[in-house]
Amino acid sequence: MSKLVHPVVALDVMGGDQAPDIPLQGAQQALNQYPDLHLRLIGPSDTIQAHLSPAYLEHPRLSIVHAPDWIRMDDAPVQAVRQKTASSLVLGVQQMLQPEVQAFVTAGNSGAAVVAASFYLERLPGILRPAMAVLFPGQQGHTVLLDVGAQAQCRPEQLLQFARLGASLARHMLGIERPRVGLLNIGEEPNKGHSTARAAFELLSQSELHFTGNIEGWDLPRNRVDVAVCDGFVGNVVLKLAEGLSEYFMDICPALPGTPGADRFNYTAHGGSLLLGLEKLLVITHGRAEVPAIVNALELARKTALSQMLTHMHAELKNEV
Image (cartoon, rainbow, N blue to C red; front, top):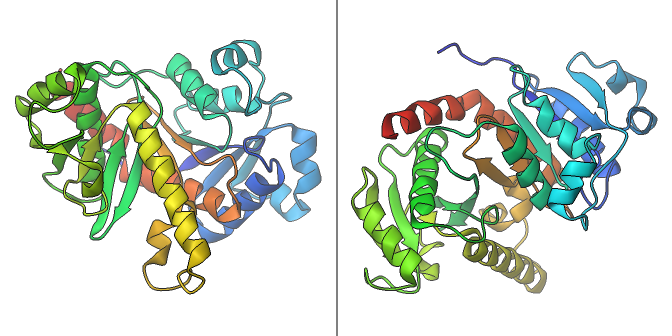
């Protein structure tokens, strides 16, 4: 396997509540921080040129791909992807069809991003549907939590596939040789939960994974497992609750921001969610993202590309098919 030296990441300039200003500011800052990073800015070329100084327009590690349209946050995902084929989001996903582009970052419509990626990109071996994963902060590091929004309803075999994706991420990004996998449920006992959860428990128990059983919500910040698996409905509720609590405590404890370790619980410091299960990587960050969140999303894409995680993931999943 040849080592990747210069990761190429595409960025949706028109994604997010404060586009194009915030994505473009984040792009400039990321170029300054990471000398190996190459960026492709996807959006209306005249808008991009009007917002960038000549120094960045002529930057050797930056290029522009003209996209005259964009998908709005309230657009219906499937309809928008079908009708707005010249949008920054759709053209950004299509950039990943080129072998030199490793990832795409967007703060735009997450539903449309999942639809576009699922339509244009090949799935990894044995994966029916992609899953969104986040690194959930805890007392002793991070837990890979997935799915957090891509698939609201899942079959038991999909939860097993998500567990394999999460375990591979934990191995190659977190350096955990034998990740502990848990199924997020309403109790620890094997017979807890609805029929899908109980069937998934059986599949996980019989798999090659280091499955430790059911876990509950309070186990996440305790890092009881390295990978926590659930459907996208449950995962999204858990994630949004955690983000809301984080903001709440930051607001009522003025001394908390800036203290050692506080950044672990600031969602902007984590870049965003990774859409896993496809041949290329999509990083989806918050629509209300500020500049630090864009920079961290680009760094997450860069770091994942340099780790060649998807190459390892493809090989591991191929062995399980």
